[in-house]
Image (cartoon, rainbow, N blue to C red):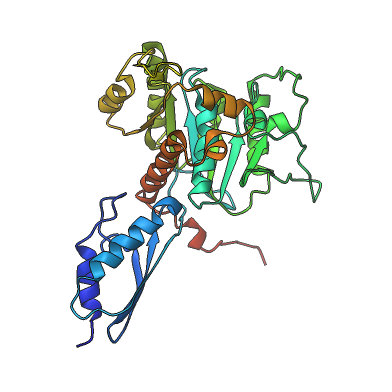
Length: 362
């Protein structure tokens, strides 16, 4: 007796993607189900970058289908398709960029730029096409963190080609000025420079653009919220009370301008002694989780205070690249997947499907 498509669908309804908690039918991930006698093939198309969990999902689906009576050969193809999602009202999506993720902190020195670099690299490691924009005009960090010292080229004399590092497209004011040159600019010049870096860079079909924001809630953040289509924001903090105080201000700012908070990353949550292995909460404990509870947002992940993170970032090879199979890299990849999942669950942006209407006088 041949297997029916309805049997396949019923079986797929009974198992859940362990990353989203949703079954493969209601989430519309199961596609192109083909039945040939007792043989079955199908595609599982996930809405988030998923390279490191695809084998697990393929095995989960295959194991479930093997329980069906008289099942033959099973072929399960697992992949990802990233869609553009809605942004704050009144702001248009940018060409060649599906989703923009702002990485922010209320306070400097909490590891925001390190987190932004590793988040971008982790999204790329999980299979997405990713760019990173260094929006800290006064103190750009990404050129050193990504190990880039070149100048961007211009093909048409009007726009710039992004530089490449570790499979990620990158742009920073630090690529355009000498490393020792201070940017002695007032607010309007700074915000103008940010918009130029964003809009005059020829980004190549990005699934995600990660924007590394300067600390605080000033001109750059205001420009970002009013003129740049941001799909979601990640807040970086440490457990220290003074850092949490400023992180709360950053979170409230994004709430006010209608940018969804994807979650909080708690940096330097514990320190493990490299000599004796003793673990200590030197900046306090539970602060990030408490903030998440107060504002009803998720804790995306907690990272240790580890000398390797600092050394690798300073050396131009952040942890996700320097030690891709390490425990710390796994945390960054988990954060990246969670961010991708949260974005995939937001409303889709359909503006690209609408025709442009031009009124001309004849």
